[in-house]
Length: 194
Figure 1 (cartoon, rainbow, N blue to C red):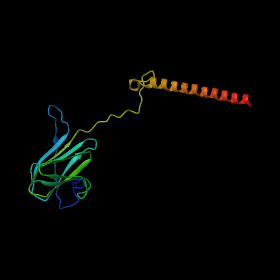
Figure 2: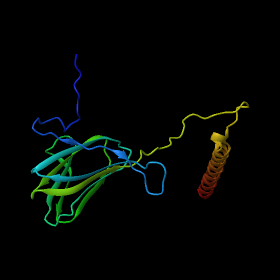
Figure 3: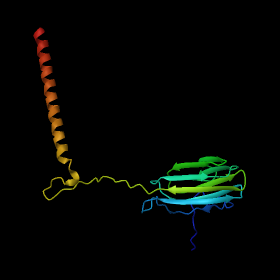
Figure 4: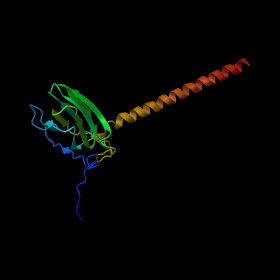
């Protein structure tokens, strides 16, 4: 059995389209030691009407930034960001002259970039940046106990919650008693007048 390399959609749907894979490298903010995400910067010259690119390994929990920048005053470029196929653009933009088109989003896996040059050659810088995956701390559903069976440091609110519940029950009892006395008083006063 031979193993075939399976590419994610939309990158293997049409044989005549041969998209170019963009590659990542670590991105570190100036003045910091540890990487703060990944970046792909590509300075390109396009001779064809339409070029196709794609980038892989995106995470839904990490922000993604995309931009296409042209310094050519004659630039006339259309950009489509695609996911399921090359015909449906999830984000689309245009560059006219020396401008920048950008988009922020979150997605999982891969996405495709379709660049249509109405004037050729088209010179532009295509940039994709993705940040670090956000780590969300989830609270534990388990409560710990020390040897005596009392709440541990992880459950400091136990005593306060118990006192709050007791105070609520006492308050409800007092309100109930007052309502009962008020009803008796009204019943006694209506009996006296009859």
